[in-house]
Length: 75
Image (cartoon, rainbow, N blue to C red; front, top):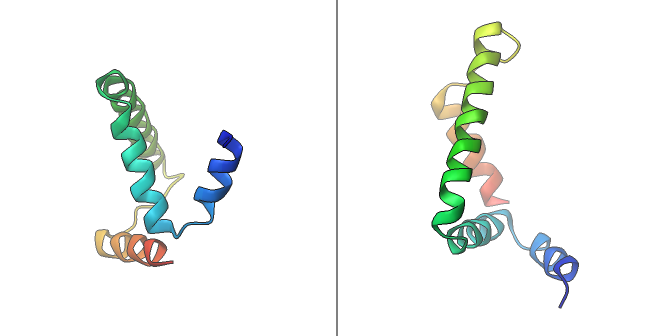
């Protein structure tokens, strides 16, 4: 099976199952990816914070964000 075939198969899964699969794949990469992924998340957090400070992005109340995430995972 090719990567493209695996990807196509995975994309047909429900969102919650895809999220679980993605998590398992990331975990399988081990410690060598931990530092790189952590750095990427820090950069993303800094970018988002800067957008909030500049006013180019608007914050969402926690409960609204959690509800939206739950709805997306339920699909």
